[in-house]
Length: 199
Image (cartoon, rainbow, N blue to C red; front, top):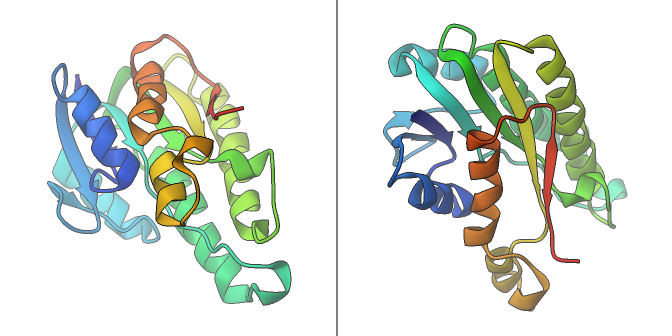
């Protein structure tokens, strides 16, 4: 299959590329350092990316940013940034994919554990992640018979925890998380939120 991976240069993106490359033709997209350049917060950039891309069998998004900060510290701009980037960026990846993903192809988005298990500092992230999951389920209904839509919801990733000075053992390695994206790609499923967390 010909697969577009948005966020190909990020932590999860690199592992997804590594996992899928032996069996699929991978096209990477990110802000810098990939085959294609894209800014998720800019719909025109997404449209331009698809025009350059042509047609693919699948799109996987492992990108998107949201602001992590206590509620009282979050500004209107912080919420706007989070909604425009990780939420609407992925929504627009789906909306603009029409005509660029083959019949029966798949779209895989990324949410996160803070949709189900919020914590202090996560109001903006939690609302974005929950929105992605609700959108993924509803988009799957709208596109039924045309394109499959699923969402991967990673828990804490071991490498991210290590970068934060916390124990890697409390998370799931990025290499293992990548297998959830492969499942969304190759299994005949749609409207699913695939959770990957260490319990």
